[in-house]
Length: 445
Image (cartoon, rainbow, N blue to C red; front, side, top):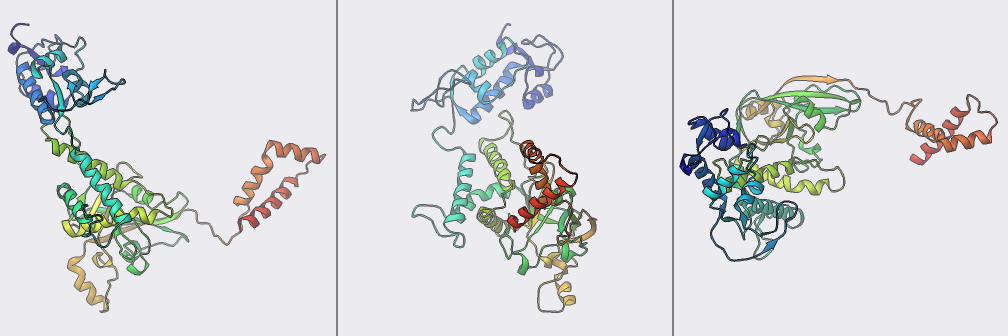
């Protein structure tokens, strides 16, 4: 190699898509001075090295700083001063720079020497909390506040120098504002309802949001008494989210939006951009937080005595989103079907075409009044018959009989029975099963 500014490197030497694109876009003469191949476009090292330096300086600094903390990370690298990364460690272990053809480490050495001057680098956020961790901590504070301190007086501080729930939400709000997204008319939403008796549900009243008086269940986004419309963008997801088993009978309502509405979309977040893209430090961390937040919002909550308590943060959050952002709903990833999304719309039967309206006036008058406010309509209904069991009917093989059969099939029990009886008659097992079943039934009752 002669003068360093005349060296050339090809896009095949880099794994990062952004670096490859830069080289392919500014392709110069063929022939790479590092891998020796001519199968990919090349660029002068000065251009790509300067770009790498600019991306490193977006997140790290080589300026001196006070502090000499030490950490040993034997699994990854030799012991290094905390926050002070050697250039090669920074590129390989922190920024994950992939150099698939650099078997002799000539390219890595050149980048460290020429671009980074073999200096040691510290995070620009050294000594303070990263923005994504800050936002995550705020959400944790919000959860604790509304679960265990205050949930109706959101402007009251839980401590003299603490935050109010509204102030915490205000810190997260700018990130959520970027997720406002329109849904066009004709957007399909599937909503499932299980039938215990095989009844077929046909109407918007039966398949839409429940009336407030019977909306007594605490759900992910709404407290008891405030009905919302929950649905999914895929039929299978609607069935899974409703916890319908393969033997259950159920109806699927196929709804569609009547007009454009606005939602906060947590289901289609931008990817967490790589270190070498043109993303800023704060933007990268904001997106990272939103991915973690979306995952937490979507996680299933076990249906036990804590359900009501664990749903409180998302219920308060949802109400603040509805009021502060002026949106009609929230879309989030399904925890039951990875490729599907769920959507909750902040509507009651008043905003569903054809549903019974709430009010003291005649229904014809109310439906005329609410018509301009309606958001969705029921298009079609599908019914799955399932295998309905009549709970009053005595089945020949119920759970008691099956349990009894398991008991007498045990080798030890079987051996004992054979020792007590010279010959087990054909009806002996049936008689024993019947007796054990009766005992189990009495115990169960």
